[in-house]
Image (cartoon, rainbow, N blue to C red; front, side, top):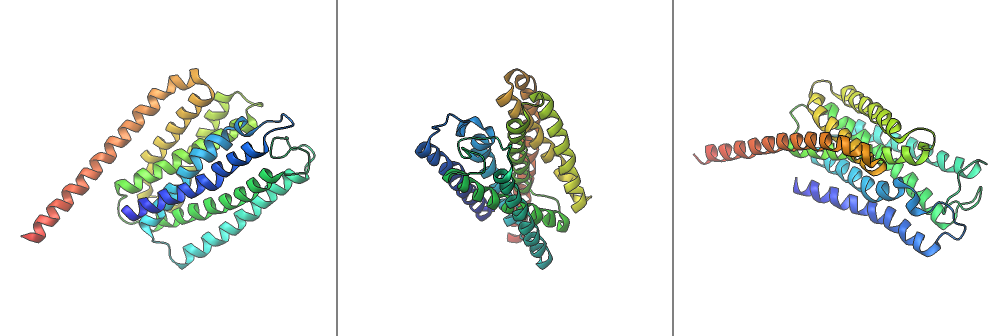
Length: 275
């Protein structure tokens, strides 16, 4: 477990420094001479790349490293999906270059042109898209092959994965579609859709054992929903933050009880072996 924690934290730090840190340094170096939307104009680039992506990938890596149950089929499918995700990401970046209506910003200062920051972000986007696809496919095979109940560590890392992934998605939705819909409506619809998607993702892998992850899934999405409202709409966020905090407190209490039972069982087993 300690090694899984270390691997997860190390992976998250790599994502943070290769994403947010590098883009921030490029922002300081290049600046915004054309007075276009800048680095801090996008919540997905700041909160998303700086907080959500490191936590999401770190928790996925820790969860998968803890289990290590993927066989040859799981690895092959994960690699194929990673390649497919890479091609999709390349297509998305190409569309930004080829389209005539791409919204300009500090990294795309003129139509059909990336500057240094734009090209770096494009590469980072493709790599992260591929990594997330690979890790999510690996998690699906872990869920499918799971026979015993999930331990407290797996439930916590899964909740962190859902929370960080949901919050990143919410920030992206507000950035890209906030001028079309009211933020509260957009975030509520996104939260409902994501909740359905994660439940289906779990159930298609393992109907029986995946029920244990339902509290972690709900806690993660509700917490991310509350945080997104606090970030984007302070008044609405204050209304639901108590709900999100209460649910998280209940989940932490449940995890603590599971961990305590785990310690008690180990103590009893150790005493039995000594006797």
